Length: 331
Image 1 (tube, rainbow, N blue to C red):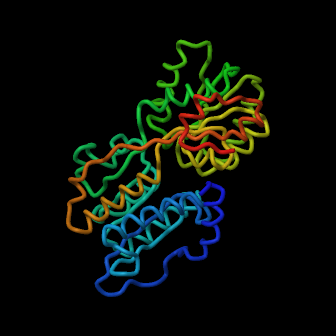
Image 2 (image 1 turned 120 degrees about the vertical axis):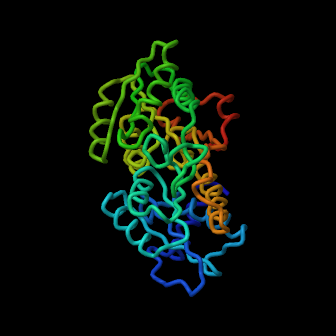
């Protein structure tokens, strides 16, 4: 099924999804609380949660049959995230699942006893969420989205797709990017050392900041952008895609679904796989494993996606070699 067809089918199924899960679990039911920083209308997030529920069901835990899953949506608003976290913790579930660093921090601040599984958290040790990768030690563990090779691959992908680019702007949110963005910045700068291309940091922390930054980048005729993965850039990907198209700026992203939604190209972690693996950790915790002894795990699956339609609109030619390497080609 093509991505566009899948999203259409998913949209038709939205009415089946609970927005806040008001129903109370039956006596004896186990409970899982899930919170995402994005809106309930975010189709890709719904897909990720479907993957989690499907894998959990394969492991013997089907929602409504001995287990109740409660959902909260952050809508990209810290206040909504905080409220959702409080509501979920008040339910005293057996396990909590949260995506992204701001959500994981909010969960950790609200409870020190309920086991928490995080996904798409870049630096759990640096953010004091766990004591160490191999032995977290507290009530949190999970799955990171950081891999050292990504910085160079993003740079290389932009360079191959848009060889005329001479200045690369790296957009990130200082609050949640690894090392305030410096981790990937250093890797991208290293990749650029053997080329005439220059690299510049572009920190953003909200939608307005993104819009102003791209307006400024557009003044450079030979600019390209690497969009680092975090809540701000992912949550406002519609704006980034739209402005990049308006100004005809080539931009590469960290997640496949952003290319599927109109971005030029992406390479990065398969987020759905992180949710699938998180279901395995939820199963282990529900069966008695100690969250403090479950190691934080790195990503295992990566995806390359190329949007040929967007490339054509930008006047770029995608080589047959790159197309052959792509896991998904959007036409």
